[in-house]
Image (cartoon, rainbow, N blue to C red; front, side):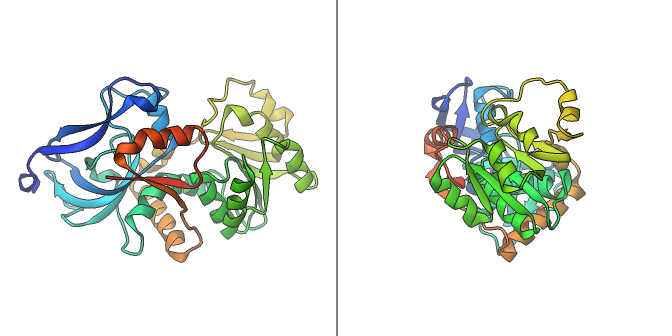
Length: 332
């Protein structure tokens, strides 16, 4: 037990006392207790920004108040609680959690931590743990992409989208991406999208049909939600898979499941990352898979912006306005 080596002390963290807009987040000094049994204290070097953080901030995903948002981070272990044997002081680690990362330090359950290889920077890890592991379960488990597949990636210039484009191309798929501007189209193409559809100017369903000469896609990866449904279903060939993993434009409303039959005996699923991470063996395998493509260069994480933790509100405003490209990293 080493928590005695790191006594309680003040640190800075973003706190939300009442859910609401970006202004609901405040930087405060708080007391962090020593890590409890099965926990390690991580001193953050970098913190990831994700749309799931917005869901918690607005109350779409409930959390007891007050709370600290933030779903991924990377740093060094500076203390461990009772019973911890798999991590020690000085270990470079990264993690995915539900809340708590927007802080200088955090006590994290060791079952959520993975060791960070020296070849991967803290910033890359913080920008890719949640997004990269999401891409892993989408591409390798929800629908196992193979050479020759045609896949549609909505929000292809976003954090998850850019990883999906690169990894999908590396697996031998033809990637079609939807984006909101010519600048984002260029990013998606650079990342591996063979085609980029400007959804504000073009009918993405018609363009997919044109691009594929009517054959359509094997799978649609949709993190947008309401704005792209049910159009996403019309982009699928018979027995295609609609994988909804986010709701950036709002949640998809209830629909008649018979719609899947009408549009070609389709499969629809709404997987969540934490269901995949609940099994430690699976979690470690997914992390190894992600770190492998990061080390090989098959996937490069674009960090579009680095902002100090104190500017988390500005980062959220930009994310909700779809003004970000790639990943945003907060630094303590």
